[in-house]
Length: 295
Image 1 (cartoon, rainbow, N blue to C red):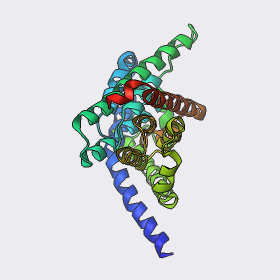
Image 2: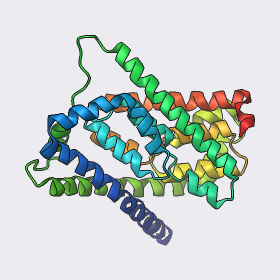
Image 3: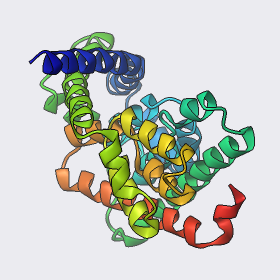
Image 4: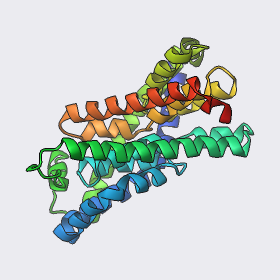
């Protein structure tokens, strides 16, 4: 009983800290959406939609910054249909979550760090543009691009959309933060009960299977997965391709928010499927070609 209580206390403290780190990003995201709805009007929405053409480039650059909050912000913007699917995927694929601080704290060479960050950035931007291009080609000529749905998102959150925009954004943020706290705490407990050693045993020295399993581990919407994958690579358990498979798929808490708010739910599963496909294929490609020797 004492061990369970200690585990729960440990998970709660970590979850509180991770949730608190996300609060500024969440609030700024909802504040932007509320400003668009309450103040900016149709002109700003049209400007944002027009900028979607270079969205994957901007999304990839933002995601490359060492903060998992950008994936959470991107999920909120996509849910409101302010950014495109390609832009969202560019952020997800390029975000490094806890990879960068783990590499630095373990004394990884600077060239290696830059190559890993650069690989995720290039893959994120390229995949984002490709997804948007394919989506545009597949869309019927008489069908318009999705309109922003900020007001519908507000209604789904059961808030008063006539509140002052700052207060409305705060309500959104607090409601989502409570969800994230509970979700993150449950994940911490699950990882502790299963054990990192057992997870490592699943992907030890298994080239193609390792990329697949690593990508599945990367889907865990928590910084613990990126920490685990980076440590396994530094310890020689994972190949560079397998590690990148997991880290490309790892979008931090962004995926949890996507499933929490995005409708229809099948659209969220579609995005996860594309994310997995890109991550696994890129990881395998890196391992079976001379690209791996560059790291």
